[in-house]
Length: 115
Image (cartoon, rainbow, N blue to C red; front, side, top):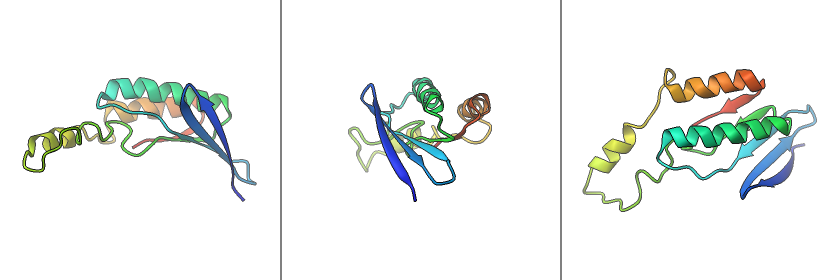
C-alpha cells in the first residue's frame, strides 16, 4: 500500500509517498522557465528540502529543465524556428545539467529523477 503526504512549501507542493518497505518518494511540483541555469538552482533547493524530509527519491516534473514555456507562448505552426530553438535545449548524459544532479544525488544520498 502506498500512502501520500502532501506538504506545502512556499506555494510549491511536495507529495511524499511511503510504502510498507519505507521508501519515501518526493514528487516535486515547481514552476519552470526556459532558463536552465535558473531551473537548476530552484530544483537543487527543492531536492535539498526533500532530503531534509527523508525522501529516498525526488522526482521532478516532466520537462523541468526547459519547460514548455520556450515552445508555446505565441506558438505558430508555420514558424519552425521556435521549435528548432526549443529542441536545441535538449541535454544528454554528459551535460552540466545531468552532472549537477548526479553530484547532488551522491551528496544527499538520494535518487533524483530529472527530465
